[in-house]
Length: 220
Ligand code: C5P
Image 1 (cartoon, rainbow, N blue to C red):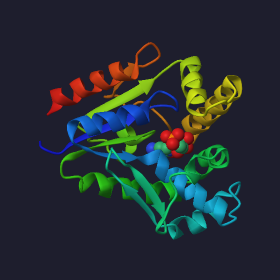
Image 2 (image 1 turned 135 degrees about the vertical axis):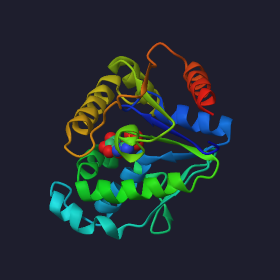
Image 3 (image 1 turned 60 degrees about the vertical axis):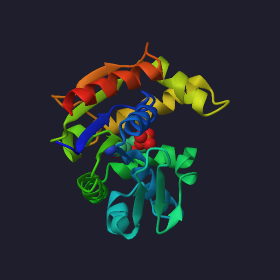
């Protein structure tokens, strides 16, 4: 099949985004960051003063934000109602609130629909990264990867990205978000039965990329 579909899931700080972008760029595939979509709808909720502790308030307005993802791995973009939100979706405020918003079933249904239509229209194939891509969004993906890493490795990577951030505080925030994402009712963070698990704790980014590229090439 020409249009290969690759699902890459796993908790935060395992190298999902860096790996997914590089693999897509190297193989000429599109790239979709589904976390950015959940962050974008969370940014919209915060900006519009929605009480994010109230799931029914979130559900009532979930359809109002128009989220558009650019799928070029060299320049992935995310816009809400025509405004680029690539910067604002990475703030600590959005990061701390995204799990509550993404747990709301109405939000997931809308975003999942968007993800499936983007994947279906990617003529050259696509790498989709997230938490529930292999289990729920694209259960028929040609290749499913589940990235893991020790909490220490993940916290070290994240605090390296967020310059000057305290490693312990980063570690606690990250574990809290993963626990919330793994324990929600609707499509929690989970490894699909047929996913290939790759522990990235002791691997360089380059090694992880090579490993995934090899696995994709075996499927093409
Ligand atoms: O990948 P990233 O850290 O940007 O994801 C932000 C949040 O979006 C996650 O913590 C999770 O709550 C949510 N998410 C999700 N399902 C996905 C991708 C992300 O619920 N497929």
